[in-house]
Amino acid sequence: MKVFITGGLGQIGSHIAELFLERGDKVHVIDNLATGRIEHLQEHKNLQITIDTIANKKLVDELFKSFQPNIVIHTAASYKDPNDWYNDTLTNCVGGSNIISASIRHNINRFIYFQTSLCYGLKPIEQPITLNHPILPATTSYSITKTSNENFLQISGLDYVTFRLANVIGPRNVAGPLPIFYQRLKDRKKCFITKSRRDFVFVKDLAKVVIKACEGYGSGTYHFSSGKDVSIKELYDEVVNSMNFEVYPEPEIREIGNDDVFSILLDPSKTFEDFGEIKFSSLEDTVSSAINYFYEYGTLGEYTHLKLKK
Ligand SMILES: NC(=O)c1ccc[n+]([C@@H]2O[C@H](COP(=O)([O-])OP(=O)(O)OC[C@H]3O[C@@H](n4cnc5c(N)ncnc54)[C@H](O)[C@@H]3O)[C@@H](O)[C@H]2O)c1
Image 1 (cartoon, rainbow, N blue to C red):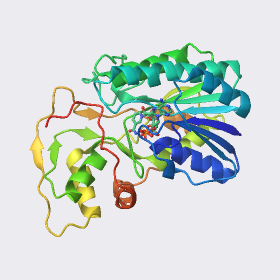
Image 2 (cartoon, rainbow, N blue to C red):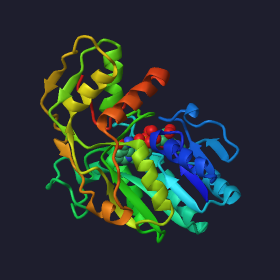
Image 3 (tube, helix red, strand yellow):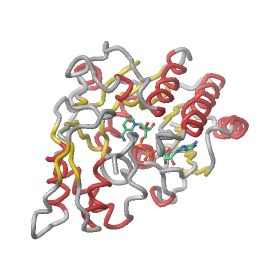
């Protein structure tokens, strides 16, 4: 396969790239290093990396012309600053449409996208959230622009799979509570924990399912979810365990903010039907592999899509 991966130096993209390279496939990555890192992929004879933005239409067209991909995996996304609507739009809408348009022109076999579960709004009307839940993205710049990108895909006529994700974590994770807890605990700062719950899934478990999607499994929209959520406190405790504290660093427990969701539990039944049984890694193994990564590389900014209270 010839696989074009946007955001291939990020958490999800780099793990997928590694699996393709292990199989002997050819991979071309484009990444502007907004939240990715060059050290996330080792040099490889079948790997080409372009450090630039997918918002550059001329460049995207040239790369498709020279590489001639048959699979496109679109993981690049902007989300660092909830007030930076300009860059979210430039990457997620303009950049995303550049990648989809080039994929149509080059008649690629399959397009894989990663949508945020924030597309269901901050107060989902059901738990677990089914694929029939209304799409209500008008809560953050990130979910508005990510949803536009998914909408372009839906009208593209491409053979696509879009995975709607809740919380994918592991090594190279830069957003969400895991890197924030690690960094604050390392700096001996107090952590605060909301009374919310999430389904944390291991990035390498997702990468394996993405390979299956590229081989032809599934079609259309899926949830990538274990179907079980854990409290943020349980995640915090796993981080503390992995960091071997002698005295338990007591966190501050806070109420859920207005821009936060109590639980995001996605119904994975269609995914299990079409992709077969998925063996999910334990929270303990997932967190410890992320902490080992943070010890070596640090955390790179600890971003969140939500506005954090100071
Ligand atoms: N990790 C999760 O829990 C989660 C949840 C929902 C959706 N997603 C989606 O999954 C995808 C991958 O997420 P991730 O966790 O790997 O995030 P990530 O930040 O690690 O990876 C995103 C990559 O895109 C790159 N990028 C950003 N703007 C770019 C641009 N204009 N041109 C080229 N590259 C650009 C970044 O540098 C980074 O390497 C994203 O589309 C994200 O919206 C992730």
